[in-house]
Image 1 (cartoon, rainbow, N blue to C red):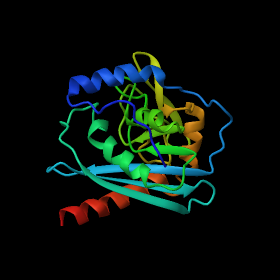
Image 2: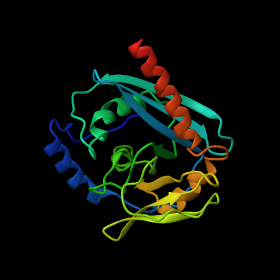
Image 3: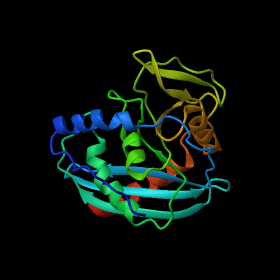
Image 4: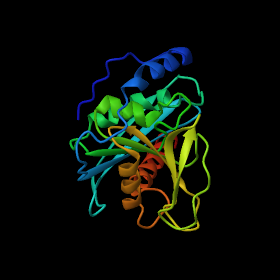
Length: 225
């Protein structure tokens, strides 16, 4: 799967902020066509203190949740650890993993933020723009203001920043802490919420995220052994 990256990677946090500010106007927070997701990819990355980075992509069949394909990559980074700019530590290696995929997924789910980000341009937005594929973020913690949803599975509340809705706090398991869903690109929040619920039949995190995380941990352990 080929991914075009027309912008050089920023070398400094100031350059990274400027790129986020420029690209965020290109995000499309809606479904341009009626969504039909047959394959769904989950992404995850991990890195160590030495600057080694691993990335994993796991593609699932949307109906059966069986794994269709996996892809991995290893790289390094010297970009500093800055909240709100973590994508720039992980994106190059993630794109290298995409280059080895033979399947082009219909939807991408990132273990990260999308619009729920201080500049409304999290990792999920960046991946969505680079791939041109509908993308959403499912994070473990919220960036923005929200009220806790009711306890039962499927309950949700809006996440807002400066009064604008940027995502949802969503219960995927009853009486379990919610996950935090936000738009990346080419999808609306209703569709994103529905997809996350369909991918969480047993656990809090989507199956895409769980399997990509497991593969990432394996890779990092092998790399640092």
